[in-house]
Length: 117
Image (tube, rainbow, N blue to C red; front, side, top):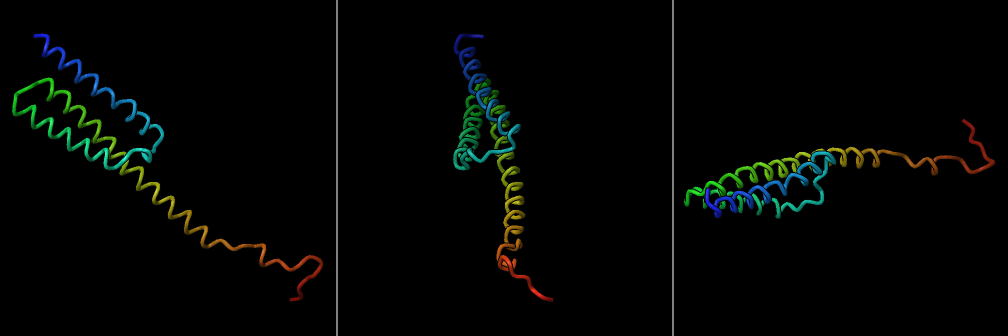
């Protein structure tokens, strides 16, 4: 293996594993709120284009790195979708229950007075 191929493989490994901390954090926290939709979508499109480029020039380091990177980025994108839909459900439940609650302070009689039934 020549130096250029080795350099490409090392660069691919480093940029690929750079996604692991974000993936692990998103998985553990069950939140992807701070991740931009546009960033994730543009990233996935860019990775797909890198794959097409790698195939067209028959470059193994580019292909290997971007296949794994696309898997990681896709998992993060799916987690953002999954955790967003879960939060929407919780938000709707909380919102609905707050609308149905009754303010008890307005239904109590004034101090010292009792109501006769």
